[in-house]
Image (cartoon, rainbow, N blue to C red):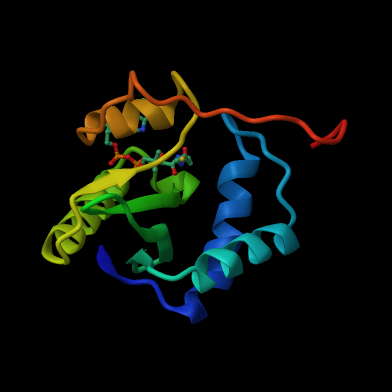
Length: 149
Ligand SMILES: CC(C)(COP(=O)(O)OP(=O)(O)OC[C@H]1O[C@@H](n2cnc3c(N)ncnc32)[C@H](O)[C@@H]1OP(=O)(O)O)[C@@H](O)C(=O)NCCC(=O)NCCS
């Protein structure tokens, strides 16, 4: 398994993987290739963008991407998207990506990784296992502005 910084040229392949992974259970999300390309382009153009790509002999195995954010006296990394190819899941790829991400960020002086994920999901179990804790203080809120918003 090779893990290296994600380049702009890798985004289309990451987007194709994302459509497959998040279109499958347990997420069953309906992402079009166009919508993912737009989201990833937004992420790429955000100041402080950083991502890692994991590849095996068969091609792309997974990726993690997000951005550095200034906090009060510290910098955080906001992990925006992470996924591993369906056939490669539960084989340690996600853990290797997370370890490489932590190593890179610690080296860069970043003190914390923050992320949003679905409560009581497989993803939460994965992040728990990686040493993340669920905040008792913070809550994610949203408000629908249109019927399908
Ligand atoms: C979540 C994800 C990134 C984890 O990557 P992975 O390579 O499958 O995870 P690993 O093999 O490194 O798993 C490490 C540990 O995390 C936990 N874990 C991982 N996937 C899990 C699952 N589906 N259910 C329960 N626990 C899970 C387990 O404790 C696992 O260790 P174990 O296999 O020895 O029990 C990957 O499964 C994935 O892409 N899932 C779909 C997309 C997604 O949920 N992305 C994150 C949403 S924000």
